[in-house]
Length: 548
Image (tube, rainbow, N blue to C red; front, side, top):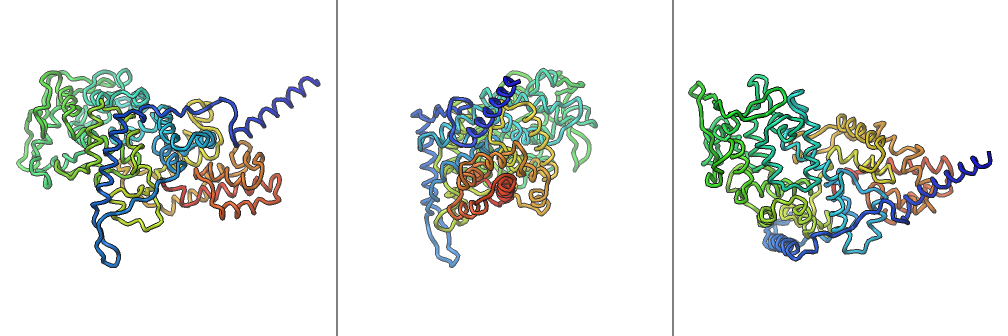
């Protein structure tokens, strides 16, 4: 009997020590983040970052603007550099959809200043959370947000394939080539689900027009679909026949139950809504016809043209979209251009040409963006941030978090350990169902994910009164708020730890003193209740809803 009691005591002590170690500075090598700067130290990489920085600095100097009282000025002063923790937070939200865990923050702060961000970015890009989250984000542009036709389209299989390819850092051009041209079963060749997602019962197969729209928007960053019913009213070189000729590349694509194939027979016919009737049209590209490969199926030819190293629209569209995913706002005015000659910011052109020259390495592109001076600027400054600053990227843009980022923040902050692929399957499943339920009730921006978002009253009520958010803050046994209440060495440390967990920053002296006073003299259930209230306040603060 005494042996079993001794074993029980030893287990309890072990658990207590483990929990406390996760709250405060770590010891040992368990679950340590590898802070490897990777290629960010290479001369060629630094040279590209330098060119981008020079382009932004030139814009800051040349920007013309007017003060509220009508004084004309030239040149804007950039905001100061953001703190390392602020950059770590925006990076984690952009790449994984959550804030850093307390476990990760402790390790991050243990690194030498000046070397943290590069190592942190490289760590996240090699973490499975990045591949899973970025696959979900990119898929919105590729296949939309709907589940699609049952049996004909396997969305989960497609997302798993896309995540695997991103994790393995398959060249982005190869990903796109497979999506446009692949043939086979939607389970064995998951890339075909890009085509299968457009299955139309009335057409008994993939929708060529919808595919033409998705190819040009998602991969070329162009709104050629404005010429679907009439000649384009902004781009005079785009006629209605250009759109129909592009759709014709999918005219021979057949869909049989779960199989996508090109039979080499059948032609695309479009309906003339003006003169009436239907007409056959041969496939053709709307610009740069010299880049079109001579051999292969029609879809293989189209894929080769889209991803050709000299098709600068492909590289620009990718950079513009990834930049928007990282900052919440595209480098161009919009995620898709209306014309071929839209003004291209010098920084975008530099990044696009480097992206093409380096083999369409997506992780390298992201590291380059993260390493730029513009990405690491603060969103606030000791002077007024004007529209001119925003337009010139002289301050980091403030944008609202996406629904899955909001709930990702809540779920991760309620756990002191990192929720990742190493977590218990029960923990991961709980997160999946919690996130799905929250996003459904919170509301999603669907395909137009870069539209300017505004908070709504139902969203605020869900955060303030919803069972999920309240439950993550309350004094449950395994919640972070309970563990902090039990193991923090003093009241100030408890407040610091709560702020780090939820907002990835330490409180100001005023904030620290205010909440420490609420904890003073509290023990047991009373202390846990105060920490739970603090968590609830931080979850519902406006700061938590933004990407700053």
